Image 1 (cartoon, one colour):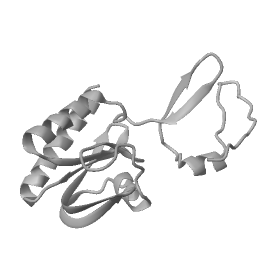
Image 2: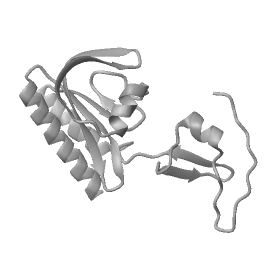
Image 3: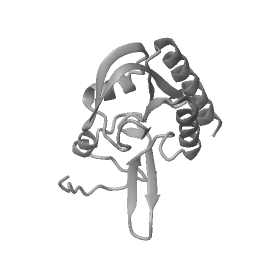
Image 4: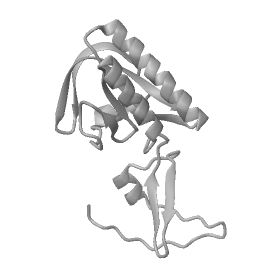
Length: 167
């Protein structure tokens, strides 16, 4: 990505405006939450999701995958956060981003999903992960037995949302 430089003034409340060109390039939208970190010299703004680096949720998913032999993809609004099917960190394509951002609920659909270089075929179930701050991402569970896949997807969804609303 080519560096884009802007010089901005800080107002009396400590605010700066992120230029539209940068917001478009990084797909930062009104209402998005940003994480602010700093060191002795630099300030870094990063898109934030309650799902990112939530090790408790990852451990819960790992247990379910192991015990129930599930095929799972957990996403935030931008990329894959955890999966045993596709590469973690894979950016979501535009159609998948739209499904996630809209909080799409899919029950037992047979189709091919594309995550970067990975194509995943099969019956899948998809539910939005919603907290008091809005839609955080989605949980997708693949399975051959459609009803059980949807039940597992619903169960995992409720556990993740409960964990996010408690922490």
